[in-house]
Image (cartoon, rainbow, N blue to C red; front, side):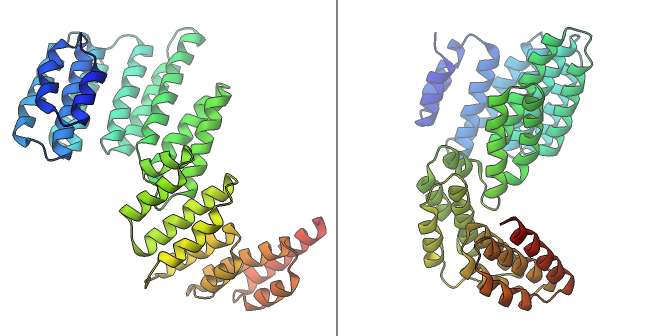
Length: 359
Protein backbone atom coordinates (compact mmCIF):
# COMPACT_ATOMS: atom_id res chain seq x y z
CA UNK A 1 0.00 0.00 0.00
CA UNK A 2 1.41 3.39 -1.03
CA UNK A 3 1.56 6.18 1.57
CA UNK A 4 0.80 9.88 0.98
CA UNK A 5 4.40 10.68 1.94
CA UNK A 6 5.73 8.47 -0.88
CA UNK A 7 3.50 10.21 -3.41
CA UNK A 8 4.47 13.63 -2.07
CA UNK A 9 8.12 12.79 -2.80
CA UNK A 10 7.19 12.04 -6.41
CA UNK A 11 5.31 15.35 -6.61
CA UNK A 12 8.30 17.29 -5.22
CA UNK A 13 10.49 15.76 -7.93
CA UNK A 14 7.99 16.68 -10.64
CA UNK A 15 6.91 13.10 -11.39
CA UNK A 16 3.24 14.06 -11.65
CA UNK A 17 2.10 11.20 -13.88
CA UNK A 18 3.69 8.56 -11.62
CA UNK A 19 2.12 10.25 -8.58
CA UNK A 20 -1.34 10.22 -10.14
CA UNK A 21 -1.04 6.54 -11.00
CA UNK A 22 -0.48 5.70 -7.33
CA UNK A 23 -3.30 7.77 -5.78
CA UNK A 24 -5.77 4.84 -5.91
CA UNK A 25 -3.34 2.80 -3.77
CA UNK A 26 -3.96 5.11 -0.80
CA UNK A 27 -6.55 3.65 1.55
CA UNK A 28 -7.94 6.78 3.26
CA UNK A 29 -10.19 8.86 0.93
CA UNK A 30 -9.28 12.09 2.77
CA UNK A 31 -5.61 11.34 2.08
CA UNK A 32 -6.53 10.72 -1.56
CA UNK A 33 -8.16 14.15 -1.77
CA UNK A 34 -5.16 15.70 -0.02
CA UNK A 35 -2.68 14.12 -2.44
CA UNK A 36 -4.70 14.97 -5.56
CA UNK A 37 -4.96 18.61 -4.54
CA UNK A 38 -1.23 18.76 -3.75
CA UNK A 39 -0.49 17.48 -7.24
CA UNK A 40 -2.81 20.11 -8.75
CA UNK A 41 -1.15 22.93 -6.78
CA UNK A 42 2.35 21.69 -7.64
CA UNK A 43 1.48 21.65 -11.34
CA UNK A 44 -0.03 25.14 -11.06
CA UNK A 45 2.92 26.64 -9.18
CA UNK A 46 5.68 24.99 -11.22
CA UNK A 47 4.25 25.37 -14.73
CA UNK A 48 3.51 21.69 -15.14
CA UNK A 49 0.91 20.26 -17.54
CA UNK A 50 -1.85 22.77 -16.72
CA UNK A 51 -4.40 20.90 -18.86
CA UNK A 52 -4.34 18.10 -16.26
CA UNK A 53 -5.59 20.29 -13.43
CA UNK A 54 -9.37 20.22 -14.19
CA UNK A 55 -9.52 16.41 -14.28
CA UNK A 56 -7.39 16.13 -11.10
CA UNK A 57 -9.75 18.46 -9.24
CA UNK A 58 -12.76 16.59 -10.63
CA UNK A 59 -11.32 13.33 -9.25
CA UNK A 60 -10.91 14.96 -5.83
CA UNK A 61 -14.49 16.27 -5.98
CA UNK A 62 -15.81 12.83 -6.94
CA UNK A 63 -14.08 11.21 -3.94
CA UNK A 64 -15.37 13.94 -1.61
CA UNK A 65 -18.97 13.66 -2.81
CA UNK A 66 -18.97 9.88 -2.26
CA UNK A 67 -18.13 10.32 1.45
CA UNK A 68 -21.11 9.68 3.71
CA UNK A 69 -19.83 10.99 7.02
CA UNK A 70 -20.49 14.78 7.17
CA UNK A 71 -17.28 15.37 9.16
CA UNK A 72 -15.13 13.71 6.49
CA UNK A 73 -17.04 15.41 3.71
CA UNK A 74 -16.59 18.83 5.34
CA UNK A 75 -12.83 18.29 5.65
CA UNK A 76 -12.55 17.06 2.05
CA UNK A 77 -14.52 20.05 0.75
CA UNK A 78 -12.28 22.39 2.79
CA UNK A 79 -9.15 20.88 1.23
CA UNK A 80 -10.61 21.28 -2.27
CA UNK A 81 -11.74 24.84 -1.49
CA UNK A 82 -8.30 25.95 -0.32
CA UNK A 83 -6.73 24.43 -3.45
CA UNK A 84 -9.16 26.28 -5.71
CA UNK A 85 -8.39 29.52 -3.87
CA UNK A 86 -4.62 29.04 -4.22
CA UNK A 87 -5.16 28.54 -7.97
CA UNK A 88 -7.26 31.75 -8.02
CA UNK A 89 -10.66 30.15 -8.64
CA UNK A 90 -12.12 32.28 -5.87
CA UNK A 91 -15.82 31.89 -6.68
CA UNK A 92 -15.53 28.10 -6.83
CA UNK A 93 -13.42 28.14 -3.66
CA UNK A 94 -16.06 30.00 -1.68
CA UNK A 95 -18.73 27.63 -3.01
CA UNK A 96 -16.81 24.66 -1.61
CA UNK A 97 -16.09 26.41 1.69
CA UNK A 98 -19.84 27.02 2.03
CA UNK A 99 -20.51 23.36 1.24
CA UNK A 100 -18.00 22.43 3.95
CA UNK A 101 -19.82 24.64 6.47
CA UNK A 102 -23.16 23.08 5.51
CA UNK A 103 -21.73 19.59 6.08
CA UNK A 104 -20.19 20.65 9.41
CA UNK A 105 -23.58 21.91 10.57
CA UNK A 106 -24.94 18.37 10.08
CA UNK A 107 -22.56 16.99 12.74
CA UNK A 108 -24.43 16.20 15.95
CA UNK A 109 -21.54 16.03 18.43
CA UNK A 110 -20.50 19.60 19.39
CA UNK A 111 -16.95 18.45 20.12
CA UNK A 112 -16.56 16.83 16.70
CA UNK A 113 -18.32 19.75 15.04
CA UNK A 114 -15.97 22.23 16.71
CA UNK A 115 -12.90 20.26 15.66
CA UNK A 116 -14.12 20.00 12.06
CA UNK A 117 -14.88 23.73 12.00
CA UNK A 118 -11.35 24.44 13.24
CA UNK A 119 -9.96 22.33 10.38
CA UNK A 120 -12.14 24.29 7.96
CA UNK A 121 -10.82 27.52 9.53
CA UNK A 122 -7.23 26.37 9.01
CA UNK A 123 -7.87 25.79 5.31
CA UNK A 124 -9.52 29.20 5.05
CA UNK A 125 -6.37 30.74 6.53
CA UNK A 126 -3.94 29.05 4.15
CA UNK A 127 -6.26 29.88 1.24
CA UNK A 128 -5.84 33.59 1.91
CA UNK A 129 -8.97 34.37 3.95
CA UNK A 130 -7.52 35.11 7.42
CA UNK A 131 -10.47 37.20 8.65
CA UNK A 132 -12.98 34.49 7.76
CA UNK A 133 -10.66 31.92 9.30
CA UNK A 134 -10.50 33.74 12.64
CA UNK A 135 -14.29 34.03 12.66
CA UNK A 136 -14.69 30.27 12.13
CA UNK A 137 -11.99 29.50 14.72
CA UNK A 138 -13.99 31.53 17.25
CA UNK A 139 -17.20 29.69 16.33
CA UNK A 140 -15.35 26.37 16.72
CA UNK A 141 -14.09 27.45 20.14
CA UNK A 142 -17.57 28.53 21.31
CA UNK A 143 -19.09 25.29 19.96
CA UNK A 144 -16.72 23.14 22.02
CA UNK A 145 -16.96 25.31 25.15
CA UNK A 146 -20.76 25.13 24.99
CA UNK A 147 -20.82 21.34 24.73
CA UNK A 148 -22.57 19.45 27.52
CA UNK A 149 -19.75 17.01 28.11
CA UNK A 150 -16.81 16.40 30.42
CA UNK A 151 -14.04 18.97 30.86
CA UNK A 152 -11.46 16.47 29.56
CA UNK A 153 -13.25 16.08 26.22
CA UNK A 154 -13.51 19.86 25.89
CA UNK A 155 -9.79 20.27 26.60
CA UNK A 156 -8.87 17.84 23.83
CA UNK A 157 -10.98 19.82 21.36
CA UNK A 158 -9.65 23.20 22.49
CA UNK A 159 -6.04 21.98 22.26
CA UNK A 160 -6.75 20.86 18.70
CA UNK A 161 -7.90 24.41 17.93
CA UNK A 162 -4.68 25.76 19.48
CA UNK A 163 -2.61 23.43 17.30
CA UNK A 164 -4.35 24.55 14.12
CA UNK A 165 -4.18 28.24 15.06
CA UNK A 166 -0.42 27.96 15.53
CA UNK A 167 -0.08 25.95 12.31
CA UNK A 168 -2.11 28.57 10.41
CA UNK A 169 0.06 31.35 11.81
CA UNK A 170 3.16 29.52 10.61
CA UNK A 171 1.90 29.72 7.00
CA UNK A 172 1.11 33.45 7.01
CA UNK A 173 3.21 36.65 6.83
CA UNK A 174 3.85 38.38 10.15
CA UNK A 175 1.07 40.95 9.86
CA UNK A 176 -1.52 38.19 9.34
CA UNK A 177 0.05 35.59 11.64
CA UNK A 178 -0.11 37.67 14.82
CA UNK A 179 -3.83 37.21 15.53
CA UNK A 180 -3.59 33.44 15.07
CA UNK A 181 -0.55 33.18 17.35
CA UNK A 182 -2.18 35.36 20.04
CA UNK A 183 -5.31 33.20 20.10
CA UNK A 184 -3.17 30.03 20.22
CA UNK A 185 -1.09 31.49 23.06
CA UNK A 186 -4.23 32.28 25.08
CA UNK A 187 -5.39 28.67 24.71
CA UNK A 188 -2.06 27.07 25.70
CA UNK A 189 -1.49 29.58 28.49
CA UNK A 190 -4.94 29.16 30.07
CA UNK A 191 -4.69 25.37 29.84
CA UNK A 192 -1.19 25.50 31.40
CA UNK A 193 0.49 23.83 28.44
CA UNK A 194 3.56 25.84 29.31
CA UNK A 195 6.03 24.55 26.73
CA UNK A 196 3.62 25.19 23.86
CA UNK A 197 2.71 28.60 25.26
CA UNK A 198 6.40 29.55 25.46
CA UNK A 199 7.01 28.49 21.86
CA UNK A 200 4.03 30.46 20.54
CA UNK A 201 5.11 33.46 22.61
CA UNK A 202 8.52 33.28 20.92
CA UNK A 203 6.79 33.16 17.54
CA UNK A 204 4.79 36.27 18.48
CA UNK A 205 7.98 38.14 19.40
CA UNK A 206 9.61 37.03 16.15
CA UNK A 207 6.61 38.18 14.08
CA UNK A 208 6.64 41.55 15.87
CA UNK A 209 10.37 41.98 15.29
CA UNK A 210 10.64 40.70 11.71
CA UNK A 211 7.49 42.37 10.47
CA UNK A 212 8.11 44.13 7.16
CA UNK A 213 9.84 41.07 5.65
CA UNK A 214 8.06 38.52 7.83
CA UNK A 215 7.40 35.84 5.22
CA UNK A 216 6.76 32.38 6.73
CA UNK A 217 9.96 30.85 5.32
CA UNK A 218 12.09 33.74 6.65
CA UNK A 219 10.60 33.43 10.15
CA UNK A 220 10.97 29.62 10.07
CA UNK A 221 14.67 29.98 9.24
CA UNK A 222 15.23 32.47 12.07
CA UNK A 223 13.37 30.27 14.53
CA UNK A 224 15.83 27.47 13.73
CA UNK A 225 18.82 29.81 14.05
CA UNK A 226 19.49 29.76 10.29
CA UNK A 227 20.17 33.49 10.21
CA UNK A 228 22.34 33.55 7.10
CA UNK A 229 19.73 31.58 5.16
CA UNK A 230 17.07 34.09 6.27
CA UNK A 231 19.29 36.96 5.10
CA UNK A 232 19.83 35.19 1.76
CA UNK A 233 16.05 34.91 1.33
CA UNK A 234 15.67 38.63 2.04
CA UNK A 235 18.39 39.45 -0.50
CA UNK A 236 16.59 37.29 -3.08
CA UNK A 237 13.07 38.60 -2.47
CA UNK A 238 13.58 42.28 -1.59
CA UNK A 239 15.62 45.26 -2.75
CA UNK A 240 16.36 48.84 -1.80
CA UNK A 241 14.97 50.30 1.39
CA UNK A 242 12.73 47.31 2.20
CA UNK A 243 15.74 45.01 2.04
CA UNK A 244 17.64 47.37 4.37
CA UNK A 245 14.74 47.41 6.83
CA UNK A 246 14.43 43.63 6.62
CA UNK A 247 18.11 43.10 7.35
CA UNK A 248 17.89 45.47 10.32
CA UNK A 249 14.85 43.55 11.60
CA UNK A 250 16.83 40.30 11.37
CA UNK A 251 19.76 41.97 13.16
CA UNK A 252 17.41 43.04 15.95
CA UNK A 253 16.10 39.49 16.31
CA UNK A 254 19.68 38.21 16.45
CA UNK A 255 20.45 40.73 19.19
CA UNK A 256 17.41 39.58 21.16
CA UNK A 257 18.57 35.96 21.01
CA UNK A 258 22.10 37.04 22.03
CA UNK A 259 23.80 36.41 18.71
CA UNK A 260 26.56 39.03 18.53
CA UNK A 261 26.86 38.66 14.75
CA UNK A 262 24.02 41.20 14.59
CA UNK A 263 26.63 43.99 14.60
CA UNK A 264 28.08 42.73 11.31
CA UNK A 265 24.60 42.35 9.83
CA UNK A 266 23.86 46.03 10.54
CA UNK A 267 27.08 47.21 8.89
CA UNK A 268 26.61 44.99 5.84
CA UNK A 269 22.99 46.11 5.47
CA UNK A 270 24.11 49.71 4.98
CA UNK A 271 27.03 48.73 2.75
CA UNK A 272 24.67 46.89 0.39
CA UNK A 273 21.98 49.58 0.29
CA UNK A 274 22.95 51.66 -2.75
CA UNK A 275 21.18 54.94 -3.62
CA UNK A 276 18.22 54.38 -1.29
CA UNK A 277 15.07 56.48 -1.64
CA UNK A 278 13.56 56.95 1.79
CA UNK A 279 10.03 58.00 2.62
CA UNK A 280 9.42 59.72 5.94
CA UNK A 281 7.82 56.51 7.26
CA UNK A 282 10.95 54.55 6.23
CA UNK A 283 13.18 57.02 8.04
CA UNK A 284 11.07 56.78 11.22
CA UNK A 285 11.16 52.98 11.13
CA UNK A 286 14.91 52.80 10.50
CA UNK A 287 15.60 55.27 13.32
CA UNK A 288 13.56 53.12 15.72
CA UNK A 289 15.29 49.90 14.65
CA UNK A 290 18.76 51.44 14.99
CA UNK A 291 17.89 52.78 18.43
CA UNK A 292 16.78 49.33 19.58
CA UNK A 293 19.94 47.89 18.05
CA UNK A 294 22.01 50.35 20.08
CA UNK A 295 23.47 51.93 16.94
CA UNK A 296 22.76 55.42 18.22
CA UNK A 297 25.09 57.32 15.89
CA UNK A 298 23.21 56.09 12.83
CA UNK A 299 19.86 56.34 14.65
CA UNK A 300 20.49 60.03 15.40
CA UNK A 301 21.34 60.72 11.78
CA UNK A 302 18.02 59.24 10.64
CA UNK A 303 16.00 60.79 13.48
CA UNK A 304 17.13 64.29 12.48
CA UNK A 305 15.80 63.67 8.95
CA UNK A 306 12.23 62.88 10.07
CA UNK A 307 9.87 65.54 8.71
CA UNK A 308 6.97 64.90 11.09
CA UNK A 309 7.75 67.01 14.19
CA UNK A 310 5.96 64.70 16.62
CA UNK A 311 7.64 61.58 15.21
CA UNK A 312 11.05 63.29 15.12
CA UNK A 313 10.60 64.30 18.76
CA UNK A 314 9.67 60.75 19.77
CA UNK A 315 12.69 59.34 17.91
CA UNK A 316 15.08 61.83 19.53
CA UNK A 317 13.57 61.13 22.94
CA UNK A 318 14.14 57.36 22.52
CA UNK A 319 17.79 57.98 21.60
CA UNK A 320 18.26 60.32 24.57
CA UNK A 321 16.84 57.76 27.00
CA UNK A 322 19.15 55.07 25.63
CA UNK A 323 22.14 57.39 26.07
CA UNK A 324 21.11 58.04 29.69
CA UNK A 325 21.08 54.30 30.33
CA UNK A 326 24.64 54.29 28.97
CA UNK A 327 25.49 57.30 31.19
CA UNK A 328 26.61 59.38 28.20
CA UNK A 329 25.17 62.59 29.64
CA UNK A 330 26.92 65.17 27.45
CA UNK A 331 25.29 63.78 24.31
CA UNK A 332 21.93 63.60 26.09
CA UNK A 333 21.87 67.34 26.73
CA UNK A 334 22.44 68.14 23.03
CA UNK A 335 19.70 65.77 21.92
CA UNK A 336 17.17 67.04 24.48
CA UNK A 337 17.77 70.58 23.25
CA UNK A 338 17.08 69.45 19.67
CA UNK A 339 13.63 67.96 20.46
CA UNK A 340 11.16 70.31 18.71
CA UNK A 341 7.95 69.30 20.52
CA UNK A 342 7.95 70.94 23.99
CA UNK A 343 5.57 68.37 25.50
CA UNK A 344 7.76 65.44 24.41
CA UNK A 345 10.87 67.33 25.57
CA UNK A 346 9.29 67.64 29.03
CA UNK A 347 8.36 63.93 29.03
CA UNK A 348 11.95 63.09 28.12
CA UNK A 349 13.35 65.18 30.98
CA UNK A 350 10.96 63.53 33.48
CA UNK A 351 11.87 60.03 32.28
CA UNK A 352 15.57 60.86 32.38
CA UNK A 353 15.16 61.93 36.01
CA UNK A 354 13.48 58.61 36.81
CA UNK A 355 16.26 56.61 35.12
CA UNK A 356 19.00 58.60 36.88
CA UNK A 357 17.27 58.08 40.21
CA UNK A 358 17.27 54.31 39.75
CA UNK A 359 20.92 54.04 38.65
